[in-house]
Length: 399
Image 1: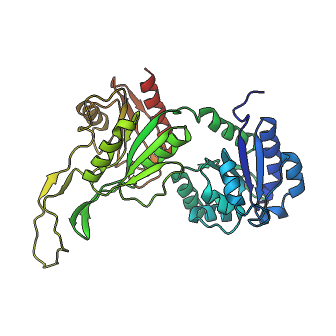
Image 2: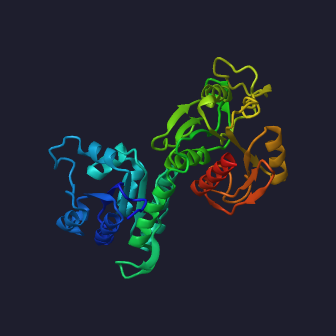
Image 3: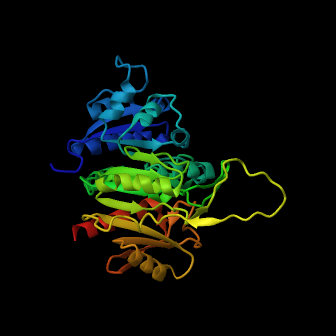
């Protein structure tokens, strides 16, 4: 037998859903594919699925309590032994705990310690899955690099029919297997990513900036790490959590970002400049807070150095990807920018389009390569767009 799961250790977290009984088939599918499965149950899950049966199916002890082992750091040992963590089924309650970082049980604790990719398969009633709070929590997890295996439409425990039913056990296992089949796509690569806005100070309490949230750059960093790369993320100010396993360097201004990129550029084999660096900065920032006088004030601006344009001319085989946030003539403006900055690939989008641009979890983009070939992509999540961008960059690197 030769499947992507052979020799892998999957930690399966089971939460208190009626669908918990399906974890038995998930365990069986994984073990038949050659994986080792370690099951962790929440207290509520024990009401729905027999602990002993899971132990028999997995061939391993089932853990349920943070303090039920002679190992005082069981949450660390379990988390660090896993090649991948799957929570299936995941209730609305547990998804909320993950989103807020609550760790009041064994599964919650080990998820905070995890360095392995995390997959979550929700299961709940249709009204619960559609609730804005649940959707926001799921979006937050996606932004952190967690893979959500969306529930499907089907009959639910309440008797209703709708979206909320746990994805089929075979689909869940295929998603995990697919992860391992592509997780080495960037093995051996060092990916340098910039993300977020920059803040250019006016005085100690005010600054010039833009609407970038950093979500696109963080998605690229998360996918690159999942695909086996060593990832260096140079991040402007953002509230986003650093993707698991990624080295993050925090900067504030465009000049600080340039210095960080220059310092790490030589290590990289692939550079993705997704940050929205301010084009201008105040010429003479005030050293003290500017007081309100009611009189008009004039702010003199000077250009911020163009990080992309100032990269070394000899890039030693590195693939360099840039971004173009446009409001008109998107493709033509992006092609000009790609030529001006000698980019191997540019990702262009119309930031005024619904579902694209800043502060949202989706994007609509054009990929333009070094031959000016244009690939128009439909609206998709930024995680999915990150996969397209990295796959295109990898193809360029191989040609």
